[in-house]
Image (tube, rainbow, N blue to C red; front, top):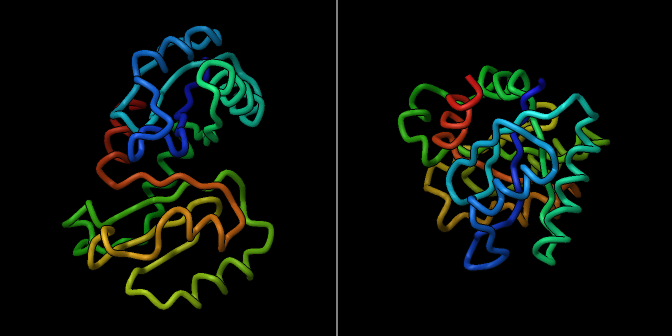
Length: 180
């Protein structure tokens, strides 16, 4: 049975859109998924499901969240193979990787329709952050940390006109360990 990594966007942030991970696990069970494991409180779920197109699986989970909690949370799914590719293709130097709290990966809900536009947006950004787009994944290095950066998820989504959710490198590695 195929395994998926499910990333919920915008839950349990700043006291908004609260979902307890035990409740989220029950919700996934109610959808017929199996081998469900949650990680942290930010909406990371590894689960197995009968083969179905990923967009349909994401829509099924999104609809269940709306029905159960009354709010919308976009779902971004990746397979273990896609996850390993994200890790293998990272652009970060060994020096940058010494502080994984400054390394962020933004998983986009879709491939950008206009890569030239996206690359133009990236090139026009005036901050210190280093940004690399590879397919439906944006890699960001925050040399001064994320706390004061203007390059947040809202900025990225607005400029790229795509839904995305970000995870730091430590979470990326923990999810990798779960699917391995």
